[in-house]
Image (cartoon, rainbow, N blue to C red; front, top):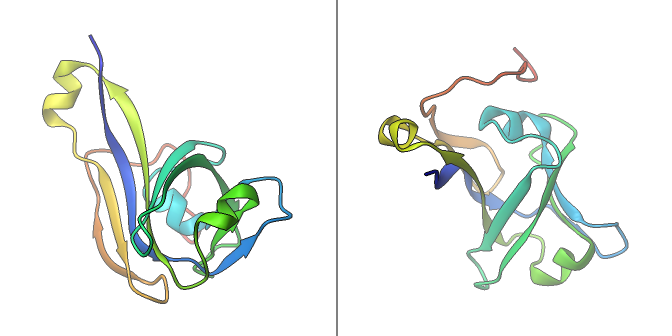
Length: 131
């Protein structure tokens, strides 16, 4: 048996851009995505705290240290600049892994600067930008 648990979350991110003409996805500054262990092209669930919309898409990396959070393609219709969103992704764990798992969580302010970081139970398997 495997259980699906929250792997990571970027909470209260402020939308900085929206482009209907883009192919799709959500652009996230690479440093923020990597901090929580979110890989480029990984499936994400996004909840818009401002209007209640919820949608699935995939993450693409944007320029680091810019606080970029951009809705692309169809998702651009589900929010606007300034909306606060929560970006979540999930992973499967064995019951033994689930018993000790803690997700990586970052909470952002209105400028997408880090207010709080919870490291969770794992370290990234790749280099975090700026380290």
